Image 1 (tube, helix red, strand yellow):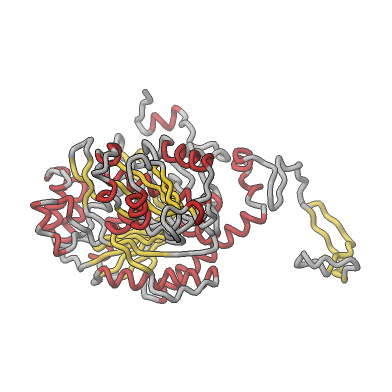
Image 2 (cartoon, rainbow, N blue to C red; image 1 turned 90 degrees about the vertical axis):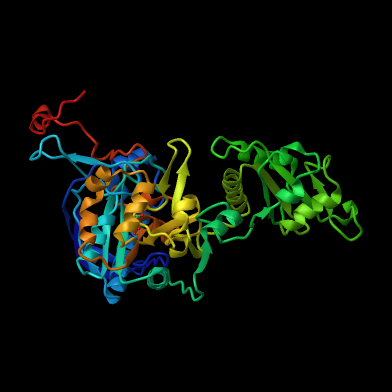
Length: 521
Ligand code: ASP
């Protein structure tokens, strides 16, 4: 590390590629501020260091221009969030980190309490209950850019500690929340990326998102919508389709020219463990008129020609909106499972066709989520969002007859196939809340011990309220055009939840354990 004093002069060999390419320093005095070792990898736009090495020396990695850009972007975005929400009358209020378990459905990180031996704090999975208490307390618009902790298995877009833009509003209905945060989202796009989204953000009911895209976070940068082919596919002696609950497909534009090898590649893809389909049926609408089976039409060719007439095959392709030159891809099986599998194939096709352009942004709201989901293993309902989410008033009667069909006043903000935020209108009626708790299988004692403080607070008058939380790290990576949220976190953890630079988590010395009255097994 050097300090150089001298005179700034015009450069004789100018470098237009550099911002300072017109000038140079004629040095008069040179001081070594700090001697430095040769870094273990190159600190340049592209480094020659592997992931592990760069994580270990994260402070050197952070010197690289791409990371500097990311951290600056994150800072600018945080300032834009504060500017907008402050302008809308939201107060930034901090909530504690040492709390009790909060209800987001993941495992807790726990902290032993020395002063209260044998007792543990849980780090908040979100400030959900605390922000609801702030509504009871009369702070009608709250927000916080806040760390949340969830002990879950990690993926590229998950970290054990991550940051939410957490918001709550009192005296609102769903429409009010969507209105404010749609404006906020547009503000963020224009302030940070200079992208002006003028159209209203599309709203898609959850059931439609599942039916058309097989996903509750559909990527709408491209079409390839699904069509239900069950009625057309069944009753022609092809037992695979006949025995299936659901047959569904979509047309991949311009892919009729896929070779046998490419199609085999797709078959392999759907059979992969994570996707787990048994097989794939395809229909090709050739654009070569010489091959046409009807004059002037395209030739249809499929992997199930043995079982269907050309007209029957064509009818399926047409239902999918296929045109000449397209390839129709069809899966079958149990409805929800098949839709999810086809969704993976849809994304794969988009990838192969180069349709997942990181510079294009198509946000949407997914609304009308189901309130509960049934778990076959434990034989009980779970809250899809969390237990404080209110059902749609018109669906309340279904709570007694058919809880699985009750829709929630819950919404997600989705962009380019990623869930960026989610929230709901909360229950503020104690009787309804008690009913939901009991449907979720909590007994009175559990309700009192876990949520007693909230139920008590509601006794003193709770305004109708609702809110939303956005994943700030994800929002940064979406805006910055990277897959990984780690690139936008100064000191992230690796996939095993370790900070390899700090070598955390680590063990405690016997003295500390004794103080905490903890014995290790
Ligand atoms: N607490 C919720 C979450 O973390 C967000 C919300 O309902 O506001 O997903």
